[in-house]
Amino acid sequence: MKPNKASSVVTFILGIGFNLAILAVIVYAMFHFTQRGFDFGSYFASTMLEEGPDYEVIFVLEEDTPRAEVAQMLYLEELIANPWLFRLEMFLKNSTRVYRAGTYILNRQMTNTDINATLRRGQTAAAVGEERITVREGWTIRDMAYYFEYRGFFPQQEFIDYTQDGIFNFHFLDNVPDLPGRTRLEGYLFPDTYNIPMNPTPRDIIIRMLIRFEDIMEGAWLQRAYELGYTFDEIMIMASIIEGETGRADERAKVAQVIQRRLNVGMRLQMDATAIYILDIHPSRVMQYHLDMDSPYNTHTRDGLPIGPIGNPGRASIEAALNPTNTNYLFFVVDYSDHSRHVFNTNYPDHNAAAQRFWASLG
Image 1 (cartoon, rainbow, N blue to C red):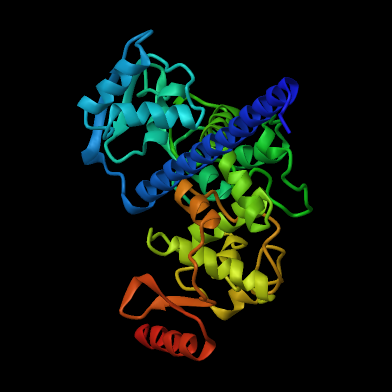
Image 2 (cartoon, one colour; image 1 turned 135 degrees about the vertical axis):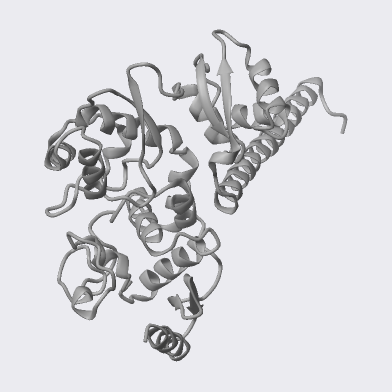
């Protein structure tokens, strides 16, 4: 039977449509996996490399400098590895807003994402009438308050009160639970170096820190949290625990895995950092009575996660919470031969033996 002209046209149109649909799926998949590749690269760089003052570079950016020229300047200063890949990464991550003119202090071990965010938000070197502060990873709001009073800005309690009572219109705070006893804003004041005005108010500092968190927060983080079965706030709680338990890049993802595996099997987390958080003063040595104190933050006495973050984690700990190792660890304890690292185990007898060796090393 000879096909008629109308059916041939329909067949042709359907064929074109089908091929376009396949092409769209392929393009989307390539875009998605390229984004994830850049995210992994940033995670690897931020966890495997450490920043240091020896790598600082003064970077001057004039008004209306073309983006291609900015990338080339960064390359010549050895701040990025490839100007074309830098521009491609920023395009794929939808981070192509205009850069702000100024004099910046950059670091040769910053990731592409960090450099891009710094130039976009205009965090230049301190100008006349400004000064710089550095908030460390893992600091609690109490730690910050003490530091700001030490710098002569304002009383500690004034800062603490404003974190509780101030009005902050940031979308990432919309889904943070308002629970009795929870320290508001804890976990979301991003640790970094900031330029602040002379004689700042608590709001001057807090708004800058929340804006910085908004800058570094990635849409992929929300998707990854959903894939793991957690809310983003739960991820931030885990990240704060990771920050409190280890400062080692090679251990963060392992601690994340222990936390999530214990949650999955119904074990208490029993993280010492959560007990320390409720103390007014950090003890030189954690004793059993510290661990026995009842608090909605103490995972030795309560099931599940604490009611909120126990500090303000850096990017590396957030990334670790989103990318735990694929292992079966359930326990970890300080290594008796090197107190800067931990021994991880899958079973209690091995863990107990490692713990006994640690306690014996203390004498």
